[in-house]
Image 1 (cartoon, rainbow, N blue to C red):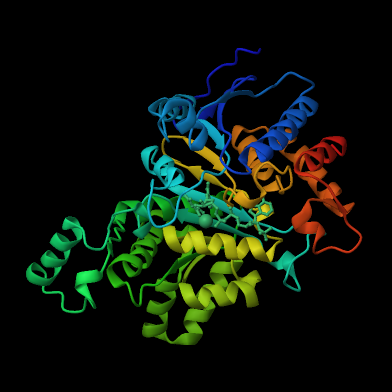
Image 2 (cartoon, rainbow, N blue to C red; image 1 turned 180 degrees about the horizontal axis):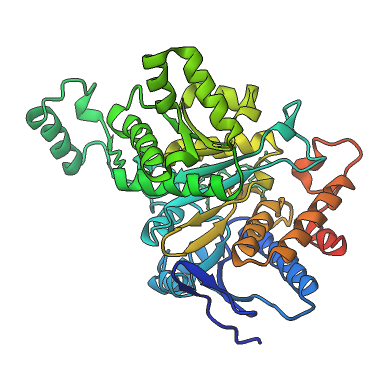
Length: 422
Ligand SMILES: NC(=O)C1=CN([C@@H]2O[C@H](COP(=O)(O)OP(=O)(O)OC[C@H]3O[C@@H](n4cnc5c(N)ncnc54)[C@H](OP(=O)(O)O)[C@@H]3O)[C@@H](O)[C@H]2O)C=CC1
Ligand SMILES: O=C(O)CCC(=O)C(=O)O
Ligand SMILES: [Mg+2]
């Protein structure tokens, strides 16, 4: 048992042994505290759910500061090879310096393993303190494109030969006239492709159908960035209609009916589609979207968007249901079966080594992992215990500071409370 066996994939389906080897990256900053607490909780849930018949065999792989200190490399090839080989991994947060230094290892992992979806479900747990009046109305699942966009890291620093060449090309070959202050500009490039959009939107619609969701909203700033974000919207609608046919009803179809037959006919077509259980594919421009998820969250369900928008939207939505301490996620390639589960938050460096922060985001990322393995009984045990523990007001500092009568516990103690309440 302690040796473990490999997860395999055949015809896109995971074959999970009772003792799967799953690589983990501990993470920087608060990562070690969180992982220690989270792994204990996940192990206890699996043990209890299956009476010891199933067990995850965790295999540490290195990335970030620990990797650099031990190997001289920030992201060793062996780590990528292991995750490739074992298919499923989980990680703590990794530090990325601002304005210089190494590029994001988190982004590198997503790009190098081609984990094209960043899946971030956002739901409310009863009793969690929230800044909004009806936090239970927020129940969305973000599908964030994970490999493209301005986030891909193609950018050139002010004053370098590269940026000078690029500015010269833009001005003198492409006829660009509107670079203000060209001598002192840094330049970033924003690639958004049809293939990248299609595989992300396809995954989002498949998810909506499988999970019985009502709508998929394509979020973009396509009025301003027409050929990247605007194209994302157009490709998304095209794919929905071409690949999903009568399982969906799109706002592009609504507009066509409206133009040809008037608004009443278009409204009726959408209402009929809703009654028939079709997934409504709609879109929203990113700025108004950020207002409406706060004022009318119940109108949104699955959200498909590009990399940077998805990053901002994830943290904004997390705030509505209690903050970044309870915001799980997964980076998934739905075609190859590879996935790395990780929290939405970062390393929270000011709390490093204090055994203080909320481990719930990584624990709930672990719940997503258990569900992904098909180990639903263990996943349910963790969820039920978390609901019970929060309802009893035993919480970490982030919730305690916003709750009356809470018992503030450490990161490790919260893990112990979850295990006791299973
Ligand atoms: N996927 C990844 O690995 C990610 C890595 N990062 C990296 O992390 C580093 C720090 O980023 P930063 O922007 O400060 O964002 P962080 O998410 O690390 O922290 C910001 C604040 O969020 C709160 N917070 C974060 N995690 C928790 C938790 N587990 N429990 C409770 N509260 C929490 C704390 O708020 P408060 O101060 O109010 O208590 C904290 O000060 C950067 O290098 C960044 O690049 C960032 C995001 C994702
Ligand atoms: O890679 C990083 O350091 C930040 C990434 C991030 O904020 C995210 O993916 O949500
Ligand atoms: Mg982020």
